[in-house]
Image 1 (cartoon, rainbow, N blue to C red):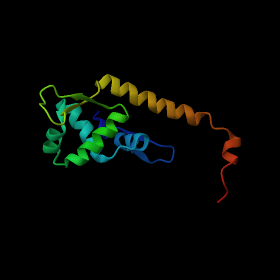
Image 2 (tube, rainbow, N blue to C red):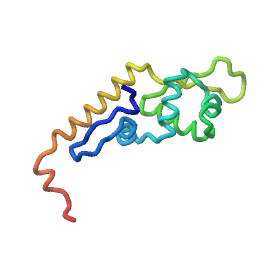
Image 3 (cartoon, rainbow, N blue to C red):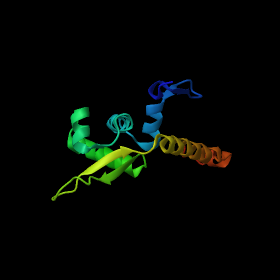
Image 4 (cartoon, rainbow, N blue to C red):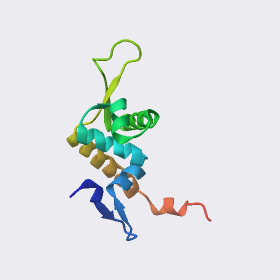
Length: 128
C-alpha cells in the first residue's frame, strides 16, 4: 500500500493519514514532507537541486532540510566538489529501514507515555 494512502481509524471514527500523523508527531509541514519524499525517491540533492525540482525558494528548502536533519530524517554531507567560499552541502534521506525504525519507535514511545496516564491525572485537569 502506498504510504500516502495509509490511514488509521481513531477511536473517534476519524481517519488519519500517515502524513497527518507525521505532521502531528514531528511538526512536519507539507513542504517538509515534499522534500523528504523527493530525497527518498531521487536520492541525494543540493538545495539548488531541490529548489529547481520542487519549484520552492532556497529559503524554504533550507528551513525544511534543517528541520528534517534535527529530527533525524535527513543527513547533510559537505559537497567535496565545492570550491572556495561557502561550502555546499548535499542532503540525503536516512536509509529507508532506519527511517521506518525511527518512526515506529517514536510512535511506540508516544503510545507508552500515554498508556501510563492515571485517573488521578485526569481528575487534575483544570475545570472549564
